[in-house]
Image (tube, rainbow over all chains, first blue to last red; front, top):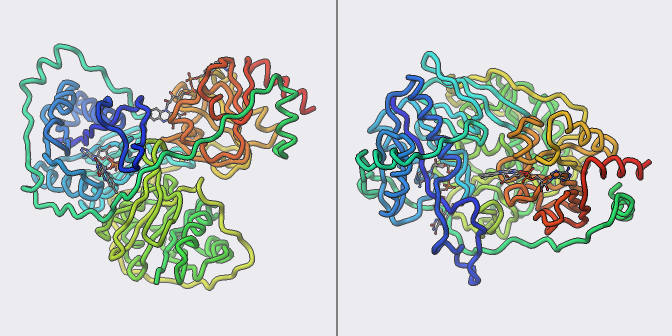
Length: 248
Length: 314
Ligand SMILES: Cc1cc2nc3c(=O)[nH]c(=O)nc-3n(C[C@H](O)[C@H](O)[C@H](O)COP(=O)(O)OP(=O)(O)OC[C@H]3O[C@@H](n4cnc5c(N)ncnc54)[C@H](O)[C@@H]3O)c2cc1C
Ligand SMILES: Cc1cc2nc3c(=O)[nH]c(=O)nc-3n(C[C@H](O)[C@H](O)[C@H](O)COP(=O)(O)OP(=O)(O)OC[C@H]3O[C@@H](n4cnc5c(N)ncnc54)[C@H](O)[C@@H]3O)c2cc1C
């Protein structure tokens, strides 16, 4: 069984994002970029399934500009067998990303597709669900535990009410939550080995995916700031302050 | 000429308050009609609750045994069928809505606007990106149905009681898949207020130190009638179950009072509490970032301060 893994590059989660003063975007020049944390978790899960003998091949997929290659090499160094780079200089919205994945699925016939539950730049939380709909296959979102047996995945999902367990026949789409696993660190020899692993580059335009984006961002703004409050000296003063506001 | 379809969220035969919050967002569109769609095995009690929400024009119900559990693959084709004829489909941005709404959008072949914070015009919305570090204004194509998830913390629940909207039974002819099956829901049983809708929340972080120590947080929360939340670090360390996580990847909440105890104030945690009325921070480190956004800060050891607070409260 092959596993396709979404491997998106985003602004590192430690970067404090600044909105440009003219509201045209956020400052991304020179900021540190990293793999979307949820996608590192997706890749780790796929690698573990390969190590258990459930999967035979793990393919990382990135949709983005030419300089995405270095990022995809990291995925290969972590252990993916090969990478697919869908080359586009345009930004892709989730529905377009899902349509791209569907094209790759038709070609690769994977038994499982693992994506992050959200990318931490747009926080859209859509691509996996959209892909499952277009593919007409099961989705198991927000996964914190995955077991594959007899052609089905038993997935524990982190939902608001607690932990939900569902069964999904394969092939299926899984999206990862933070507690699914702890991704491994890349070791130096693996970086060397990754240099000889194949990266397939596919022109976005050659896939025949309509990139008509229904959403336009017209303005970016910094969030409203909470004003700094006061320090109280002890428990009695805190209780008095909260009582005065009618909160206790 | 907007007609808005709001998808009801419910659990155990009860309507979730996130539904009335999504209705508030629908009211802000200033459309001609707001219909609430209830998909369940037993719809009656839920429909009656939904019909009372002010602003609702009709409640539409689809009662099928397959709808007993909220499986996105099963619900989405039905919602997509009903969506024909509506300009907007609004779903609460809870794990239920986040799971099902994109599946509906893809079936309709349209984009989705996630986490709507405000409605600027019928097709213009504000939503957060980068864990709330930037707010974008998004314009959706007016020629297509808008599928959107509604960020519960940004909207007060539409008032409730005066209305009695008509309830109509729908028969939908949609092929439902059997490839996805519900197994079980493991719920922590608790008599405490619900974290997502509570007016007071007390949260503990890594500073609490252990599962056993968390008792001090529960006890204090019970004393003031609060729900209990936690940071990711506290959940990862196994002090508390995952449904208690507050933040970018946990629950986004807006209680009147939020008390962060032994929590440093990482940006991903703060994302979850930006809309809280009053934030109180208790931390032994006077430099902790949580104090930059707290309305009231108290520096000191939580194991000393919480008993003192209880003592002052009497
Ligand atoms: C309205 C709108 C306008 C935008 N405009 C711009 C713009 O002008 N400039 C700009 O730079 N960006 C822009 N973007 C952002 C860019 O298009 C995002 O990549 C896109 O929205 C996908 O969102 P997401 O990754 O948050 O999706 P999510 O659904 O949160 O992603 C979930 C998962 O899908 C997979 N995935 C998604 N995208 C990719 C990818 N590219 N490669 C590999 N895997 C992927 C990953 O596994 C990821 O974890 C815009 C986004 C939106 C919604
Ligand atoms: C992609 C991503 C998503 C994330 N999502 C979330 C999320 O949804 N929610 C979330 O919370 N985090 C999230 N995080 C993690 C976040 O970055 C922080 O690591 C986490 O919030 C830290 O939790 P904490 O404040 O409890 O722990 P710490 O940062 O370790 O802080 C513990 C605090 O307790 C104080 N303390 C210790 N002992 C005492 C004592 N005896 N009395 C008083 N104070 C004491 C310390 O001074 C310290 O400030 C996410 C991270 C990533 C990368």
